[in-house]
Image (cartoon, rainbow, N blue to C red; front, side):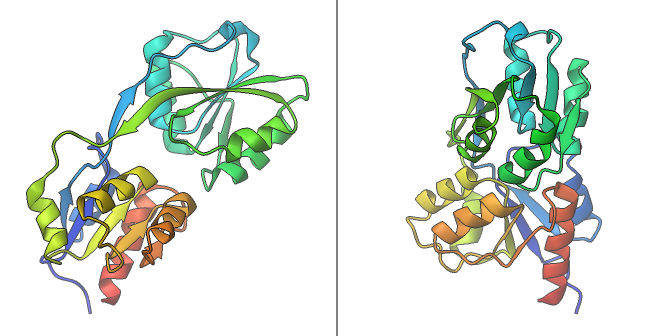
Length: 241
């Protein structure tokens, strides 16, 4: 049975320009409600050395790219690696073409894809969010010299849509979309920990691990870490209900 227009999908990520997830869901007549539970704040950072020192600069998200280029107007002769085609497209806004684009499935997988491109004497600068895990750093560090800089932080927004939050509290929604652990952790704080029955779909392994840590069994995980794949996963799940 196909779902109806009454289906409500709640997103927890900040608004995005030309949001392909929302466009895809809306085309199937479902209702998307945005309830951002993370706020991205650029940090004042400074690598140990001048940019010329680093053979590679690695970005794991568009947030990292945006925050990095608030500090630097341009790059030197650095080679650049990013996770995912979307990040590569975003990088072009700053006039930079990625030298390597990873699959984006996970940090460990990305490291495995990038390592064959590196020389053992390379110096790598890893630009990430403050809350990012250490898996990518640790795996790269076995083979090359890596410095991590935290270029942005992820905070709880000062204002939260109480109407959307009440939909969750009153079980008047169909699916919550989880694209980052931080957004889910913030939701659990707002719900005072009563989250085991939440209906969530995750964008990838890291978000799934966060859900399981919170005692939530996701309805599904998107097969690839993209918003289009996530939207299709949501649609397939709604159609099965």
